[in-house]
Length: 178
Image (cartoon, rainbow, N blue to C red; front, side, top):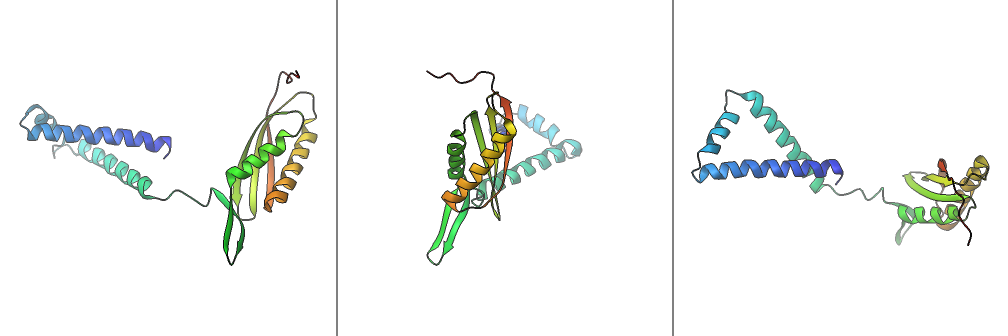
């Protein structure tokens, strides 16, 4: 459930609680909410009633859908092999960790944030990196792309369709050696 759905759930729950509380107080004999509800839901004022009902019904349908749908399993893993005994899957997180390990071995790379994208031919990899100022960025980028492609294929057998490098920043300070 994303932030939009959480906010929608909070507003929906608050609205329903308020309406139920007002109806309950009228049923218990308190007259003040009765006048408010009568004026708000008066049949002669459809410009208030129908938009409110449309919003509440749409929110209810959206929240019901979010609650009953199964989270996508196919976008969390890749099928490595399939045989008569069954399938072997690898999680995209495992491939991310492999990419982190490979890129960490390259001199001059300070931070790395990989993102793995599953596609029918294998995977696509996006790498966001922070590098030190003393290296040749195009040469290191090509080296990183080759290393990732070779190592992921060697370890998992998955074809890497593309490796996109994004150098987000050039680090100001070199790491200290103690």
